[in-house]
Image 1 (cartoon, helix red, strand yellow):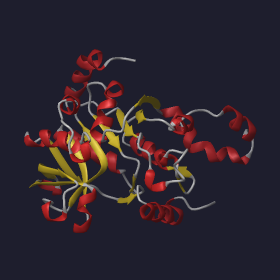
Image 2 (cartoon, rainbow, N blue to C red; image 1 turned 135 degrees about the vertical axis):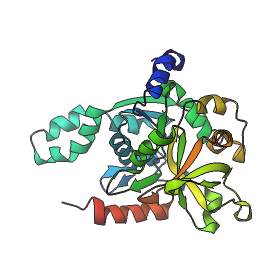
Image 3 (tube, rainbow, N blue to C red; image 1 turned 90 degrees about the vertical axis):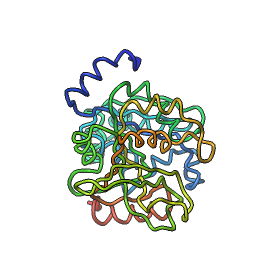
Image 4 (cartoon, helix red, strand yellow; image 1 turned 180 degrees about the vertical axis):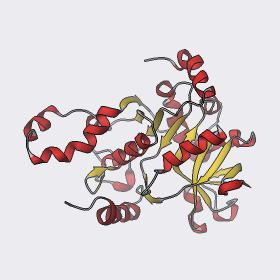
Length: 294
């Protein structure tokens, strides 16, 4: 594995030349306790929306954005994710030459087009710590981040594709945002900032899970980011924050103080599949509108 410092000069040159973002990080080490007992021995990211697991939708979105290196920060009991993005010789031999081969077409396509790398987060110390754990897989280049709990759908460009195009304009960190009911702000990182052309926001303030009466707005950050690689050094120096965890929000706030974070009101629909209600809503929507049965 190439150490981040060994990639530095080439990666920086690539950034100067406006090269495409190649890598996407998936923090998938969480326990999924809200879905127990279903997640006792199965990663929550492998729970299916119709016939595909949540994590596959995320990888497909990243690939559509031109990112072909999928980097996973995993934990114990997450081996099913690695197995999913691998060849299963016994199964494929069993269904070879039958009509059932069609069912594996989508995952085979991902395996052929992408590279999958993995590192373990040995302790659950927050999203910021998970992102920092992924540094050896990312190196010194901008990268996408997808939280698979947030399943996003758009009939055109996916959310990460939209954000990758915006990165080419601003060359700084981008966070996807949407308006949420005031009573829900305590579930999210919430931003404030200055309106720019196109409805984008130059973020000036960001608070992790504020109380309703302390929220700077109702604009919540959802699980889609494009981050510049200096975020790793910032995270290394970031003390534990809300809940005793290293918060990505706190590190992003340091970038925001320098005017280097853009909030993007994305096009499309988000489903909070980290909640049972959102998971059921997504299943019904995708069953009816996206992946109807043959």
